[in-house]
Length: 87
Image (cartoon, rainbow, N blue to C red; front, side):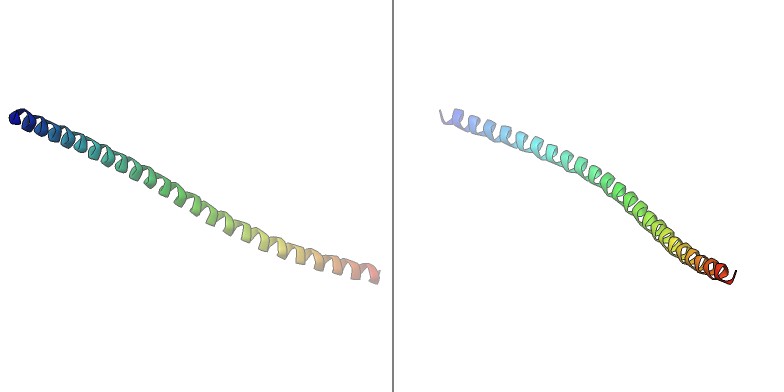
């Protein structure tokens, strides 16, 4: 009877150990998959960040140009007004 109990106990330990190894391997695969996925997301975020910086610089350049052109138009308007007064 004791032999049967020992054999069953050994079998239970072996099954638990096998299930534990499988679970550990599954978790490792999941970690690797998530790591690869996170790497892809990081790369995509860097691309978006770079694009946002480029677009911000372009927008600033256009705003500055618009201000210069607005000032030039104002001066031309003043000059045209003064020329009309002279005539």
